Length: 258
Image (cartoon, rainbow, N blue to C red; front, side, top):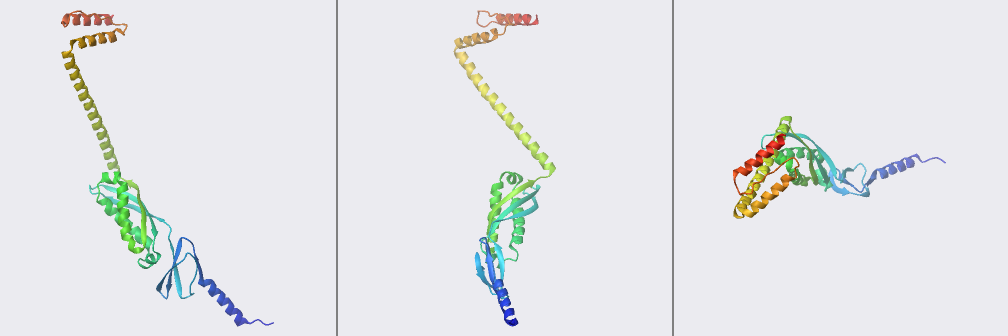
């Protein structure tokens, strides 16, 4: 039996057209469909059909994606030069706008992130950049989110990964930290001496009003001295008098010299 060649060719062409017409997108993808260059909308996820050679599709990934911002040289408001690099996490929320409104949304976001990072950090001093990263990250994220919203995108997280300082600035910061610690130690020592002098002044006033307490303190001091086996203490019975004290000192010195 002779084969019908035209029919066979027609069947093959129809099969090829059916294969080209059937498209599948994954759960995290959307397909933006253009017909003769005009936007029809988005399709997916799952199975859908297009007209071959008439419709054209552009696949858009809706997952959160990371964008590495190259190291930027920033001059802070107090004229300190530093190198900063960051990481941006973003996602597409409207696939049609992401394709139609901007030529390359990922490249545009990268360039915008670089300029925004320089602008925000340039308005802050070095101390703020080093100690308030969370606040600055949040500010950069808000500015990028507002700027990329017309593109159908959302900036999820911005984080500064590293802040590199010149060597001379690192030495200056180390000297500043050392001076700050020295300042705190001296303040603590002065405060301790002030409190001790207050207590001693109160004790002297109390002893002046209560001589018996002073005598008891003397006995306690003698008890503490008596714990040392190599000392001899002689105390005169009279109150005051330099003779007793001088005698005690002389005997103690003579004993220790032996």
